[in-house]
Length: 113
Length: 112
Image (cartoon, rainbow over all chains, first blue to last red; front, side, top):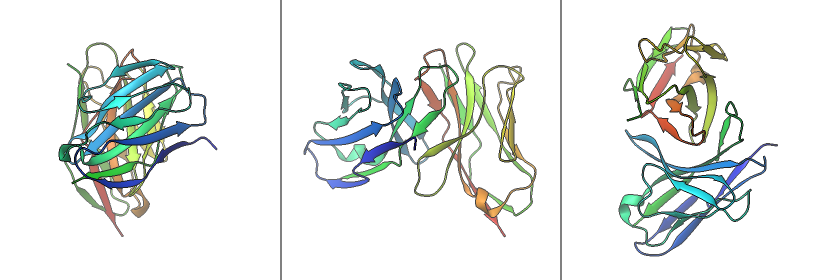
């Protein structure tokens, strides 16, 4: 089954405590992205990756890091989380074809106290 | 710049009513356009898409036509069901296939 998985699904943490949200896809997709979803703002792209070791900033990259060491994995790293990073995060992947569908993970709800 | 504007919700309809959710866009170039649906507690799923002007995307009774002259991609369904209750997002994608712009989402509530 084609899948994008994220872990954890829910996380409550405190300001400044480094955390990583993992994302993995089993479709051998080249493209992967991270989004955050906030009420009234829709989804905003944080970072994306075109392939292994190739990443670029989206619209709201401040305070986040990513890495793409393997094709299937694209972790999101918050080195020093702050309360304004409390949000619902989605990972997504897509094949290299221009008409390929983008698949989304189930989401990670992060609360930073 | 590039952006997507959707009508604000929530939209509340009775079962079997006609649905329209408006979406307009601004883009530098010729985007592909998408509608995604998000059911409670889930990620987004692709509902339909159109990749060039005058294309009509359709799926599960939903339709949207890519109108270049009005820069619009309105979502329609002739007869909604309770199971259509969800949040709907309009989105565009440009030549960089991984760069997406989403609207703010429109929540649809369908009452029996």
